[in-house]
Amino acid sequence: MSQSIPKRNRAQISRAAIERLYIAMRHLFIRGSYKPMGVSGEAMIEALTELRPEIYGSIAEPERVELDGLLYVFQRLPRGIEECRFVKLISREGYENTGFEPIIAPKRRRNSYRIDEEEMYIEMTRGRSDIYDILTHLTFMYIEAEKIRRNSESHRGRKRREWTMLEEVVKREDAGQEFNKEVAYTYLSTLLGRTYEETIAACERFSEDPNVNSIFHIAYWLGHISSQEAQEKKDREITFSSTLRDRVGHHVHGEKWAAAIKHTLHEYDLHDRPLHVISANLHSTMNLLYAEAALGKVSAKRKEDLFPMLSKAENGDLRDKVKQYARRHGMIELDDTSGTNISVQLFDLAKIKQPPSHLDWQLPDNPDEAPVVFVMDYAFGEQAYETMDELLRRHESEEHDHDMRIQSVNIMGKAGILEGGKGDIMVPTAHVFEGTADNYPFDNDLTVDDFKNDFGLKVFEGLMITVLGTSLQNKNILRYFKQSSWQAIGLEMEGAHYQKAIQAASRIRHSVSEDMVLRYAYYASDNPLETGSTLASGSLGLEGVAPTYLITRIFLNRILAQPLIP
Image (cartoon, rainbow, N blue to C red; front, side, top):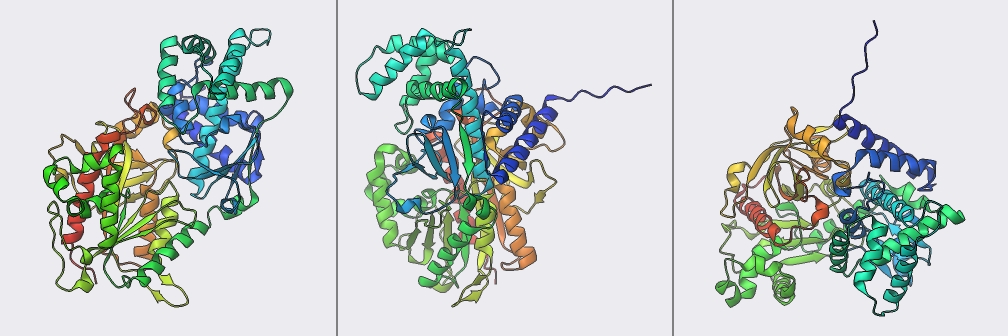
């Protein structure tokens, strides 16, 4: 008697789609090039459409163009890429020294270069996660382009009147001429397969970001390039430079980055001091240490809302004042030249003459034992392993040969939360790497009790999933992580990679002490299980101020109170 094959659930189908996507992307990267609408590209499109990531909304619908998802990806892709048939992913190969003007996407720190009217070069210096991230966004962009092309054609393959009128609107917009927006919205809504009301809302969201072209411009060029391929056989193509393929996985950029940091520690005679690493943003530690002293009367009058005030866009002059004061009182800045796009700050706490009142300030009597706080900007995915692995290595050069005197590693990150809302806090007890058998339990020096607060923020403790890409998650997979025996509280992209490097340095290489203290805390940038609360719905804004400064304050207080590790 034959047994029927059990039907797979949506979570299993989704996990299989992710695996197919990553196998395809690795294969195409090794091969060196592919055509998005060719056989290989179609396999990626099929897998992404089957996966239906939350961040890409209505990707699987044949006519409705996903507008929030488009804004999300165009904030992470170089401006003008919708006009290009050819995209080439490169390493740091010298284009920064040419006359090409670098294009930097507002939400991704990577240089891109418009080589000519049809070709865009994009620097990939942050590892495989960065490559997979951009390939996923490009695949989504091509899916939506095909929808626009189909919506612009009649059943006989002729261009509709709405397309011709959109072309005229784009010409007038490019020339800086006036046009009737209500009529333009009407044409555009037909081509996008969306309501008039939805189209107006999308146009307003796109217009709010000066680094992103208008939705009129983007829709026209996506449809135009797609039509050129379908009707004139002008194929689109994505290629990978041989230098990029040769360098990925070899820590080329991370090694240069770490070497510059270690050189600076020696230059300022800080290498023998207790060193505490913080992976976070480049403002909260500086502001907590210096804003009160730098702003004087301003901070005294507005002590309760000092940090929200500094976070507002219009207060750039106050932020500059804090930074100038910090530079005079122990802050050393290292702008990245290695290609990692991870800038660094070093804080010599012995040089702070006016201790901030909001910290439990206590320094050793011996200034040579005063902590040095090292803040590194956020890494991206697998880049976390590359940078932390190189940083924790023994310092070996022609002049120096010694272990790093690191006392603690403190990781603050933004993460998707599976229970709770934006701004809430997650305290991990372990990281599990999605799609692998790798899991990293660790002793976190922080617990839920450390985060009692007056801001109304909820705090969750438990396992977190390190995902292959935040843009490759859907509700089925996330519910599985949350409701199964994993009981996960959130998802992020760097935790397992950091912990892999830390364990190698402390337990295998012994370049840092096994007693080195670990502190991990995340705040929620989104809840992908809630409709309208994904990353595509917008940034945290001022909602992120309270959790950011709460976590940073706890890090600094623990660092100040931590007993010295020999």
